[in-house]
Length: 113
Length: 112
Image (cartoon, rainbow over all chains, first blue to last red):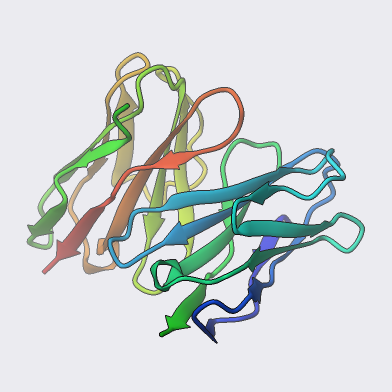
């Protein structure tokens, strides 16, 4: 079975601190794509960052970076210098080569002023 | 440019009625996806279109659910004889060739 697991239902961190959200997955595929999406209360799903499995270099987008460990099937998201606007649900997702996205259950992140 | 749009934003319907949900993808995106998000949960895949054909309908929960797409344009998700368990946010996404999916704001469906 191809699955995505997020084991942290909720997290909170002080503004300006760094926070890491965890994600693990299971697949027998060798080529796939991994994503982090942000869903604020407006419910709009916003693509934060993506990682191609064939790339060893970890993806970065401004304050957002990932730690991709292919052998461990781990894909964590690090948010540096956290801001109040980062408060949202964060979903880890994967495209295991069958086009559709498989999602984790989400982590609710609260940035405390 | 314009993102993915969905209408209506909210829909309240009585149990047993049919509903149609609309998705306008980003212009030029060949792939289109429908997902369902129940309250407090992650997204469940429903159906995927490549152009106007649907190679993967495996997520449709029952034969009450169907979807169509006109060319590489608008898609409509139809739910017949709605049930209370159909209450959810229905999200549409579109994608160009490089695998990233871009989502619309969703339609919140409430079946009373």
